[in-house]
Image 1 (cartoon, one colour):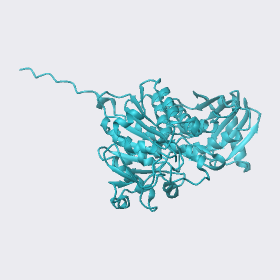
Image 2 (image 1 turned 90 degrees about the vertical axis):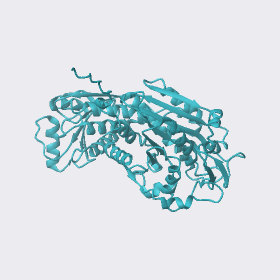
Image 3 (image 1 turned 30 degrees about the horizontal axis):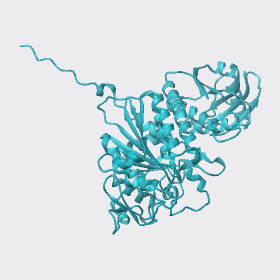
Image 4 (image 1 turned 180 degrees about the vertical axis):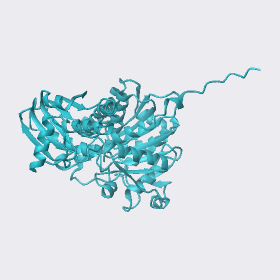
Length: 497
């Protein structure tokens, strides 16, 4: 789908030829003389429409408009959050229509700044997304073009460009998370990463079983040994900053299917375990956005990818393995495999001397119980890093919530037979999982995002959300150093005698 940003007057908005015109209305006091303002004012006065978020009024070929369909969409106070909700409602109403070209007007909003424009673009892209990779007759994506009408370009351009870039990254993340596991094996995931390597400033390296064994990633290899699909360790690099500048490292859990291993999961809804590589998908999506926006910073992406299967070679409860760090791990539950692949990736991250490391994983059902599908769980050993991620969640409308990491939570991970057990009891399961990972992240500022509740939706809306790509992108953009701070200081000449 193509997006275009254009400065339009209210009169031009109404006369523009298109299949559908969506006019966002904030507040119930309208003073414009254009056809859209008059229609909205009349409907509000009659009680047939209100600017409450998500409220719609539809008209077919109304007089004074060039559009075939006109939708008035209430967006409350015009905030980015309400704009997203209003555009989502309007686009949903158009799904059954044949609209191919849509004009979305933000002209009536009191302040259509970067955040609101970005929210509008992403809502359009999300509503238009259709998965079709494994369908014999893919559904046609009718919507081809969205024109965003604004009053001024200066206040909107940056938000528009960020929204378009994010839409591409979200589409990639959704695509790979939605694919069934036989169409998203570790090898296929590595190939998707290699495709990103064709984009500007991105380099990709893929390590196989021999290279991983040479590195001593015994914990990662233990999870993979029960599957006929070979593991892959994917390393992505985005080099947008100075060569000497320390990178931010993103680590994405890439379990392309999780049966639970010998600690087998119940059959009900096990198909959704294809989403257990949601962290990996978010890293791929984030790198797609970096290639689009070209920020001046360095980023490394690490994806340990494998399946967790229960064949005769699979790890068993009670087995002890040695991680890349040298720490030994007693595997009490083979369904707690995500932390086993992540811990070796965290150790591998040390070689980049990173300024910060963020791992992203569909890690625990306990986090779903704690936070539901609204906020991702945030754990961090560094207050400044946690604050940056929280702020990025707020600005991107991709929310997270900081959880505790008290040392007392690590008590349950003690064992007589290894340095650490991979699980504690049921209580505080998301926290004890994070405490396990923290043992391998002591040499850099570290944060962990548990996205088990936010990476996908179940039920009628089943599918990947692409989260937390927006959060990660806003966080990374916030790490870009001002150009002046990057320039080496000029040498001062010695004063003359």
